[in-house]
Image (cartoon, rainbow over all chains, first blue to last red; front, side, top):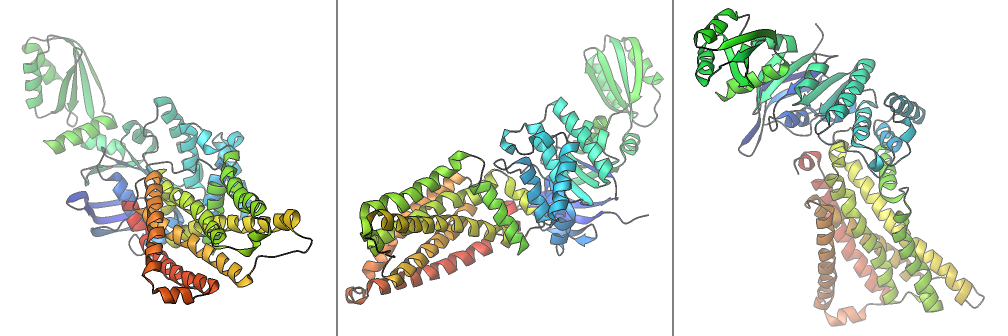
Length: 311
Length: 237
């Protein structure tokens, strides 16, 4: 098996009394899109800052691309690309000048820079606007340019910190498609932080879930579904009461149960049978019209993990 | 060296050579005052480098510096472009020195262009046929050196203030107040010197004394700027 591209051992970082990252150990294999999921303030951005060597850990260590984050941070930054929380584009400069700047920073020769600008801007449908000041571009176009900038110097690893945060669903989907096609074409490893679970589900081969600085789980989305339960059911009918809900929640095979507009949504642990649960409802006086079973989404897994942690 | 040149290219593109006509208002106005209006008003006397003229030569580039340096440092942080730059391979020193060299070069260059334009216009329109130059020549050289040192002083003080300011506006406000403190502090320092010592100095020697004092201040502030401008501190701020 090949060396992991990111290797983290017991990494912690505190800001005063606040522990932003708490004993994180993780390995990211090469060539995948790795999703780092967590709610706001979970420690995702701090992790990226630590992996880029912009911050020093309070405890623990990490190696990125084989380089130590404390002693060889410059080498990590030289071989990786980053799109941080903000696009960080120079709005008074043109799109091509923004890319040219980063080509110069990474010491690419002028002909290679020009060819790369044309290649990336054409691929992202931004070529016609290349000479316009970036300040006049739409938000989606700016974010695409920022992705192109992170990939410009052919890095083997890129860090993307919530690239679609604050976008409307159409713009987010468009950016996601561009991102997926670029990543596949370039063969780059991506460390993607997000709290958008649809995004993680569509893009990531592996995900880790973090909360309050602590790693909660890691694996492929399918593995996580299986590990956290993975099955969900929807029961349509009438006469569901709070008492029935309470009885359902007491059952060992039920991870989560809720009522939405006369639809009873149940999340199951493992491959549980539905029959005993339906019988319980009918005996308690409910009228069951339909029972549907399905696979839990990553969002269900995430919510279950968050719920388990808070209880 | 190539990193420094890259940062200088970026600064000149971002700050000075934008594709907007409004970017040219300030340089045209200031060069117009220093290189056209004042020389044509003063005539040949303009070439004699009176104390008032020296103050103008020092003040105009210093004014440009305190206008631009806040934008170059606090502005980058406010617009979130600094964080991305820090996540790249470029060194802290190249980022800082690139900003300082371009800002100082721009401001001081404006003073040089103004002086050169003034020289040509005075000789063309107010001269008596013979081509005259700024004199005394040693005072001219001292004025140029003093002007450059004042630019470095404004730039390095601007870096230190901008690093501690949340916004460009706050940085510019503190820099304006700091300039007033510097001027009045300088006057008080001069008054504190023994009167017979000051009166014994020639005009040229007095300028040399100023050069020495500002050079020491420059070295201290520049050193502090280099120490303060570090990734690990900037990312936390």
